[in-house]
Structures are given as C-alpha cells and as structure tokens.
Image 1: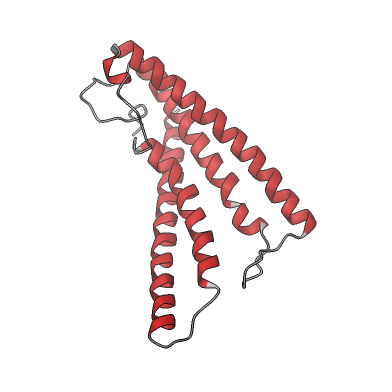
Image 2 (image 1 turned 45 degrees about the vertical axis):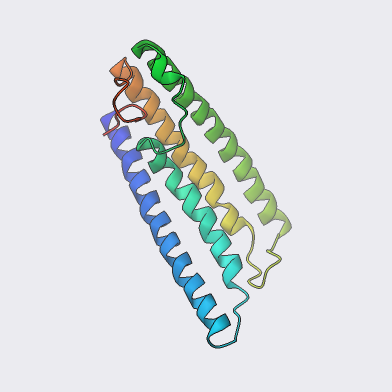
Length: 175
C-alpha cells in the first residue's frame, strides 16, 4: 500500500506543479493583455478565454494536493468538540464523500468530454478551441482527487484514530 500512497503523492505533486505553472502563465498573460490594452492601445481578445481555461486547470490539478495537505475548506466547529473516535468517523465519512463525489465528477466529466468531441463542439471565443480539450481537465482532476481520497481513507483506517484536536487538519497523515 505504500507504493499506492507514494504514487498518489507524486501525482498530487505533479498536479500542483502544473497548477502553479498555469497560474504563472495566467499572470503573465494578464500583464501582457493589460500592457497591450493600456500602453499600446491594442487589446488582445484571446487572453481572457485562455486565462479561463488555465483557471480550470489550476483548480482541477491542485485539488488532490489540497486534499492531501488538509487545505480544503473544513468546518471544525462541531468536529473539534467530538471525541477522538468521533473525529475519526467524521474524517472517514468526509473522505468517502469526497471519493464518491470524485467518481461522479470523473464519470460525468468523461461523458461531457466524449459528447463534446463527438459533436465537434468549439469554444465561442476568439480561439475556437475544441471544447473537449479544456473539458478534459475535469475528469483528470477528479480522478486525481478520488485517488487522494482513497489514499486518505486507507491511511485513516490503518491509523485507526483521528489526530488530536490541537493538531492541524490532515486527512490521515499520508506521507
């Protein structure tokens, strides 16, 4: 099982690296667009569309790493009052919910990609991108997040208990 954990961690790191690159490229494109519009008075129409696709890439590719690092939004007003066993059960339930949601998102995302490819759907913007290309990020990110959730479930199960209430929120101490 350590091999699975290591593989999931490497995929998550690759995803966060690609998300960081997408974010930096977005920043560069926005700076370029602003300079072209306000300095040279020559607006660039395709930048907004490309930055939108890069934003989807950033979110979907970073989700697995955020889950493994415990950086997803968590409401602990109730869980911090639970016993250690109650927190463990809540953690497992949450990760099972994340895994189920990821499966649903991956399946529906793959259907969306297949449909867009089948009908030849193109973007309405200036780039006229085949929509299946940016849409492919949805099932890819969902699979990565689902694998991260499964790894967190297995790690929590092996650990058999939740972290202390004072410890930072981590899904299960995946290393």
